[in-house]
Amino acid sequence: MTQQFGEFTASELYCPKCRRAQPVREKLLLVLPSGELHEYLCARCATSLGERTVTSSPVPSRPSVAPPTALRTRRFLK
Ligand SMILES: [Zn+2]
Image (cartoon, rainbow, N blue to C red; front, side):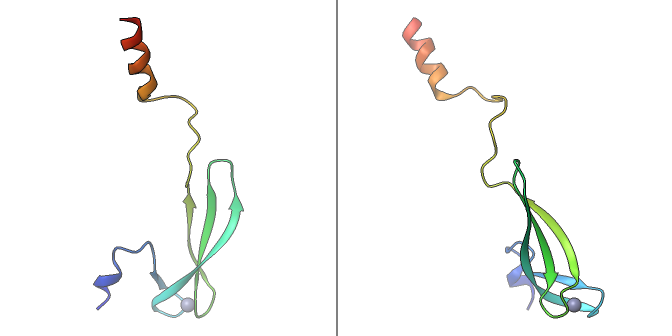
């Protein structure tokens, strides 16, 4: 029954206060330069069940992979 929710990100978490898995409410805690800090609250008793940092658009601080433009430049030089 609960397996179908497995692909969702923390749609239900075990609440120690309710002593059972409960639907969670996601609450935005902080907006960081690296992402957003969300908190999961029990939908029933509002106990904090966990936190998650959401990085929707990571800042490309250092290039780990060669961008496509490098290939074009290389080809252009050749
Ligand atoms: Zn609860």
